Image (tube, rainbow, N blue to C red):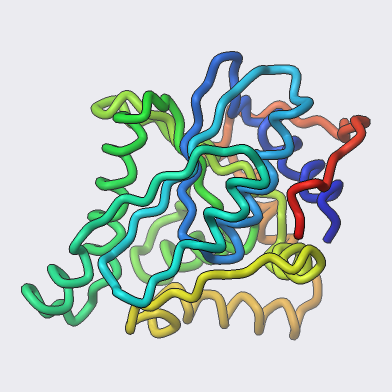
Length: 256
């Protein structure tokens, strides 16, 4: 996937769900994985021509692993001109040593989000951008259906009233294989997740299931996503559909 297509799909989500307003200061949660790097590149380039002015802060929440190298993230931030902050925590120790959690993902996610939210507020941000893509939307929908017995997935826009923050997910229209293609095309260095539970979660099961369904029934991912998009879910009703793409010249000076 080219940067131009990534920006087109990202802007489509931002416009249709009114994710960005003039004067927003947006924190991008950057884990170092492919999805968050793609989102960082998308927003870092989009701000150069988007009609509504916004600022960016890149934030990584370090879980406390000694072998977690954020140098590649810093390099991309430098190329994009985005201020970068690493939040040091002891989340890994708390989960795996102090509490010895058998199912650590839920608590880890809660602690990471808390650390990210606090730092975003400290840096003067009013919004946080998550790198969830189209596959994540469908996977979450299936997990909610199978494991919780409810029709639900995360929202394009979520307001955290207590924190006075708004969460946005600008990559909703981007498929995971396209993200991989983008990372490979521009030779961006992905930071490996050092967590021992990585790849052995309910999320991984849902990811495998969606991939299998799409292989056996080509186009099923898109049809499921369309069903969610048009399913009148409460958090998805504010969409303003548009087919307009970006006509702006797009710089690729951030790449290596």
